[in-house]
Image (cartoon, rainbow, N blue to C red):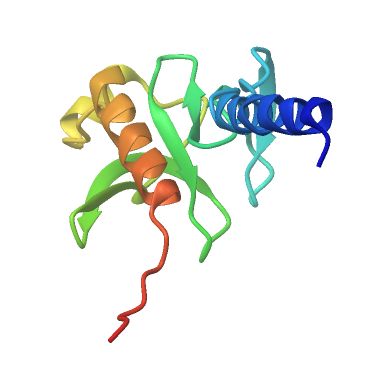
Length: 138
C-alpha cells in the first residue's frame, strides 16, 4: 500500500469512530406544543409530549405525567413501578380528565412524578439501550 493511502486510511478510521460516537448523543427532543388528546369515551384534554427519542412521556397542563393504558385505551395518571430493578411508568387506574383538579389527585394519593424521577428513569433507559446480549464462550 502506498504511504499516502495508508495515511488517509489511518485518518479516516478515527474520524468515522468519532462520528458514530457523537451520533448516540444527538437525541431529538419532543415537539413543545399543546396537543389535544381524545379519550375512548369522546372526552378530551390538553397535554404536551416531553423528553426525547430515547425516553419520553406525556405531561398535562398541571405537570402530571400520564400514560395510555393499553388494555382500556384511556390515558391515565402514571405511577412508577419497578420490575427487575428497572423503573418504568405505568397506568394508575385514574383516568385523565380536564375536570381533574390537583386536590382531587392528592386525595387519591397519586404521588407526583418529579423531574428527578424522570431523569433517573431516562438514565436507566440509556443504560439498558447500551447493554448488549452476551454469550458464554468456553
